[in-house]
Length: 205
Image (tube, rainbow, N blue to C red; front, side, top):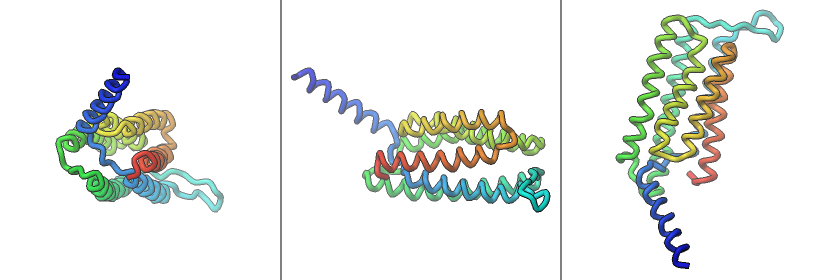
């Protein structure tokens, strides 16, 4: 009986230590909003890069530096709006848990997210100016996934799972270069919505 009590106490201590070393005030709603924004951005991108050939249902891809810059503007808008939604809902979740949004764990999380994201951004810009546009969408998935995996040790385990899924999807997208936008929509849109729904169900935020 005493052994089971000690085991329970140790489990609670481990859980407390794990919570104290992780930023847990992430919001499922922010993931859902980010996913919906990404799907909207993907639709706008589709309208830009796909041009009807005739009155039939067939179309061709129009991918130039100009369209790439327009896609970059759409991606930047989606990113900014997603960040604003994430900050708002994360602040709300932090208040509900009586947790400060800016603490040592959130700083560590941001640093570990930023390193792969900045690296990926620079790599994608290089490919953009080199005219190698077809690899940009898959690489954004890969580097975003790496960022999530890298930062997951300072937050919830679901973030790591999402990161691994994004990496796998990005690698598959590299093998099918003509479908980069579709994979991008799945990765940043559908996967984010699923992640947000799971987070909302498990943590109620």
